Image (tube, rainbow over the protein chains, first blue to last red):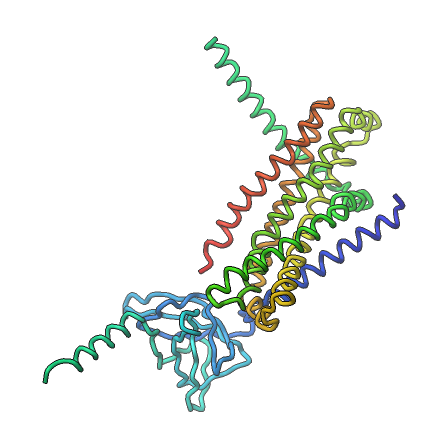
Length: 155
Length: 262
């Protein structure tokens, strides 16, 4: 086979392969949205995180502003310490509250941030003080049954 | 009778160990002689044409059809739970993580691996390799190393093409034929597929498969008895061994890569 034709085909093959990789990287996958360089970390403590997982989204007003970087159990306070990695582009007031929410009825759990009114902003390694735990379905049903039983009790 | 059985076992063990040692020495020799494959890059390009470009048709067509079948079957299962918008996630994740590298590897082993073994086995049987040695041309540097690097480079590209075409096939069936919402198809896919965790790990897998398949094919060809049956047996062994190697390696790699997720 002619050498130039051969080179041409191999060149086309390599270009097609790289285009396929780019297609996978840009159109199919999302680059890990938040890099450590342009992000800051804040810690929030919860008594119960339910089914929250590392890499779960952190949303404010429904927009993804970061991801859960780390979940640890604090053995002194018996609480879960959740590290949130937030995008540097977004800053939040110091009295922002964090709540663990569920998207849909059985969907994945995420952290919702509700901005407060403080003029100071959250900085790296800060702590979010106001938190709301995950809703555990069993507790909810238990409370509901307990309430129903109270209602029906003879006065 | 009993003594002979033990002798047989001993003989087989020695043969097996010798073969394994030979395979390792062969692999090291390829790496040591790789200089030629890059200095005379024309040789590697020529081999990339035979291993990569000529495998394109089978890879592209299989990728498209695998993606289309995933689209149909995935929709059939997902719509029972009312979550057919997750079809994009299903198709993309299964292709990028597993099916792309593994199926491309199996096809590559049977399309390119067998050809490499037959070619080198026949070169050996017709004493072309010995003739090269007579002319002071190292056959490993001149014949084997360029084929090795061509295979190692071609395989990830083929796997990426397989995955991309497969996702396109899933899109054709899911969105164009069945009518899953196009926006949620792509956005759910982008939400679930991570570049580092999924795509990069898939590429690493395909590179490892490329190394394994090409090395096995070259070794079987180089080690083949110089007869007609010898070459045909070696070709069969290449396809069987490298397919098994791909599946076994895939399990090991998956266990390391994705165990920590979730």
